[in-house]
Image 1: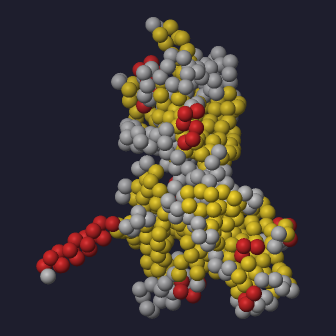
Image 2: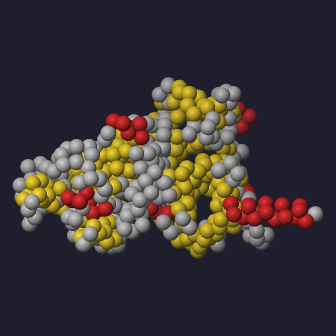
Image 3: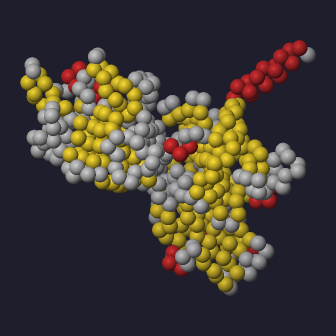
Length: 525
């Protein structure tokens, strides 16, 4: 008996170790407006299979909209360096909360298709939930003090800096970003003592009230035996800089990123930026002025989205398989005024989700091609880097017919006298948004039947819906009633038994059919 008790106690202890509670600031987003609510307890439990269960109990939006218990099981977990990313697209039943005197809304909502993105980092949990409550009303639920930073680069507004050192030399490096003072490589000693980065109050007019600083990046002369022999372009990166060759154009001079690297900077941050998202573009504010002697007056910004394994910029072919997407602008003009530029991403691997972003910014697009002047160097100011996630409709077909332009301005379309069986698979939506989610759903109210087609951005923060109302349509003619959520461009997913599924499990083989007519056999990583 004592032995049984000991085993039970050990099992309970093990279970408690797998579960963790977080007290998170709660913000409700409705119609693009954030409404802060009181802190709420969130439980995040690791399952035996490595997936997670997230529980948001007794969830209330306000005193009038009291939802209930939201429990999302089998949440996919992806290890990205020092962060565990959580992702789910799931139909759930919201149950009533603990207070029997409350009229909980959740049980009356039926199947609710919830989209979830979360991150576990140290003792912090952040998450964004996309919850359809009624009709076309979709509520965003923000959890955690850093929720707004999800899907973005660290310290993207350059408001926070730390002191980097090399010997007796010191500089201000933006948190999460790195310059030559924290570089590595055989030639690091020649460039690491030079100051390339500064915290600057040179922000643009009409910037947000909390935008107090930006980063100032400058070129410096490289001296040998007291003589200026070259220019070291001012450069910052979310990875780490390597100075490995005397030849400026050598690929041994690069920025690089690798999750296997255990080094940290002077602020204790790793030399990589986690980004488990698929952005469509990168927006950034820049102000660039070329200095004396610069014969190549073009600054450059590039971004490589990776699987977390070794990549470098400039690229090396032996690491090409680790690159999922890229964005680059090597033609930023010397205007000495603030300008906002948008750099679109292109994807080499459309089926894989990135895990990290190697972003590199430099005062000159040509290696060692900038100013050698100490008094009038190349200067690049950078502020407010933003990853952009699109959500819009490109094309909708019903029974093979293009109906894209038949919707009114509110996104509504009424159809009378429809006599065919309603099958959710007969509606196809081509979305705008590289990583957007497409959700298709059939509902009925006893009078009419509705087909809702929703595009949600990859960061879950924007969505658009098109609704088709079938007047006086009988529900007996409905096939495949369940909600289907698929990545943009995917028509259907089938397991090896030929059954259609809405999501893929790690390690399993699937047949994926795309809206362009292609079909591929793949293994979910």
